[in-house]
Image 1 (spheres, rainbow, N blue to C red):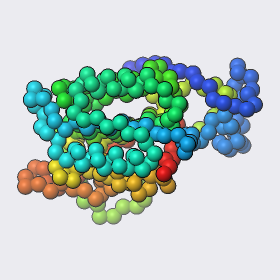
Image 2: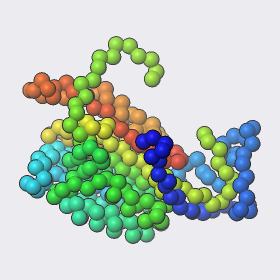
Image 3: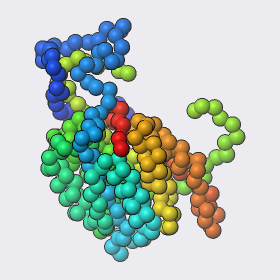
Length: 293
């Protein structure tokens, strides 16, 4: 989008605890010689993931669809749901598991969660397993809904209780019909901002959100009818292996690498054989995120 088309985005205020609050109406900037840790006393570099609290997860597994949608059964989706549910429970997530939801039901569960008291949870995580198209369209059992319409129900202007907490969305769905044939790689090498020391912060509505898609815009997303999808199986594997050791961004790089380098389609049709895929991650997180076991 060109600059001339940019639209203003509202923010929202929240207050962090500070044992020695300074004047609320004074902006105190950091000098060039002060490092990030010294100048961000009121803004921690990591999300507060209290081991005494649970994390909240929602899994929506849409496997069967109404004939009117002309969408096929997503064989292998149960394998994905089972794998990621097991992994999330090992990372202290309280998991809500829903299957074959209509657009209305999908919308309603996000609305319900937006009204919950989230004080006992560190973060919210959602895994959506379904069919999809371009422009962020994903399928309920009876039709399409825009992913943003669901996510926006949990942003601070509609769900103040989740303000400042990580909101993570992992979407296994096609985003178009293009196929990635890949390219042979023969040789390749290795391919902080200052904070204001004030106790109140106006945060953008989309801050603290991560959107992890199984594929890049416009492309097909691969799923094995027996073993599940490349993306969700890789995500479950990496979280199970390193979920309590590495920061989330590092974990997602590992997921990207596993999908990109360890998977390739094998079909009887030349037009779909030996195809590749790479996940696409849009991170609006403002801090480091570490899970725990």
